[in-house]
Image (cartoon, rainbow, N blue to C red):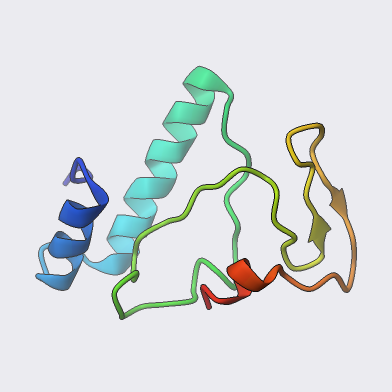
Length: 100
């Protein structure tokens, strides 16, 4: 199965049972990797906590891509000027934390 063309269609496929949330997540990761290989425009996906955050609900299985201007768990952003840096103990930004 391929990804639907829009987020609305993706959400409909997941909630309608046509596409399991875990499979949707994997398809999005594969798409991200193929776009990054071509355009070198995307950074690494956030693993662990966020990837496993929701297996149900309105955003289940739907990935989020954003510019690197949010603190994440143990990492300061590069804000477009660099790769960011490890910052042990740094909490995630409020907006990111709300995605749990």
